[in-house]
Image 1 (tube, helix red, strand yellow):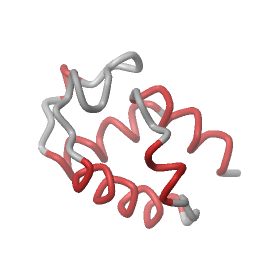
Image 2 (spheres, rainbow, N blue to C red; image 1 turned 180 degrees about the vertical axis):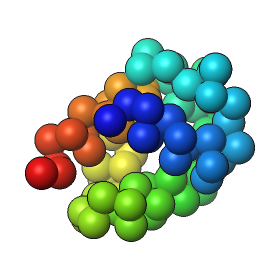
Image 3 (cartoon, helix red, strand yellow; image 1 turned 135 degrees about the vertical axis):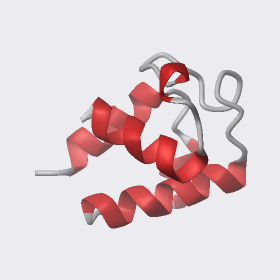
Image 4 (cartoon, rainbow, N blue to C red; image 1 turned 45 degrees about the vertical axis):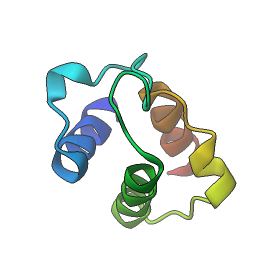
Length: 75
């Protein structure tokens, strides 16, 4: 799951794969803005056919948070 999400982040936000770790802070370490976070959320919803509420998107602090959320909401 982590490798899939890392790939999506690289494609969607042009973040080098070597910077994306489970502990990487989305804003502080990767420089992801609110707008980019929404863009990523949209791509994840399409990719995994799930709904992610706006407040849930804002709860993502690290890449690990995204991996945990997607893992818990997919079959």
